[in-house]
Amino acid sequence: MSYSEFILPETGLLIYESKHQNGGLVAKHHHKIYQILYAIDGVGTITLDQKAHHFGQNQISFIVPYTNHAIESHTKLTVLVLSFREESLTSIINPDFFHLLKKESFVLGLNPVVASEIKLHLKKMLFEQRNQDRISTYAILVSLMNVLILLERSRTTVSYTDANTLRAERMRSYLETHYFSDITTKDLAALFEISVRYVNDIFKERFNTTPMQYLNNVRIDRAKDLLVETDKDIATICFEVGFENISTFYRSFKNVMGISPNKFREMHALS
Image (cartoon, rainbow, N blue to C red; front, side, top):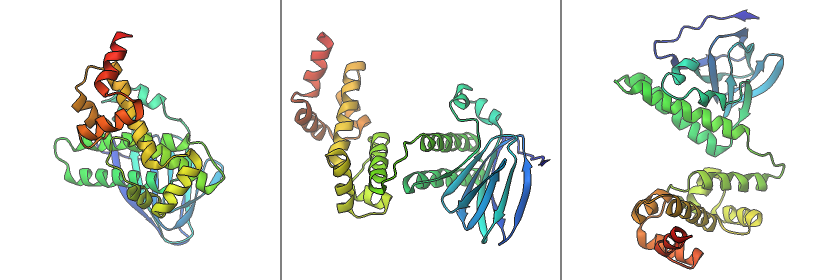
């Protein structure tokens, strides 16, 4: 296994396309840097230390420094490679961020939602790398942090053998981490590539409620926390938790809690 010197630009980060012909082989080697490899198209095998993994479209590999790795392509394989030094992130954020990540290499198959989010961040990084204005480096690092967070959360997601249960759990996770967004059942159907009716059926079977009812309850729970823990204006809380307007927020809050947001805040201020 050979050491391969990898020269990064001053920013400490580089993203680029790597093309592999059918039957091509990148011999086993290692670097001092981190790499994230995202398979855009094609099929191959990636070996991390002594273990071989299938590597194809919407699969991603996180490679920590000094991991011996190799790639063999079984078809024409296109890979997006993101190489970076740890120092490029820790120079602008708390170094504890890296301690939260698993310091081991892995290959991960991405569900459609996470794959879509990661692809968006990678595209942003490619754009900023070409753009190169005075804040491009910071924009790239923000996208890198988001990719790392998505990877870590995907790795720690509980595994389910039943496909519908897995879809329902992924929907629930999506709603809990995107409750502030404008989300409809049609949006979920598009994200998970199933019908609207199927979205409602499998979610209700798992959680005994519809996705939109669940989303409403998540927003109300978050609003309750903000009402008790902060002195933020009701309008700000309404905006922060994802409601379109104050009247909808008041109506939804009262339907769930039986009292208005103002009354809820007053009661907890006295307790």
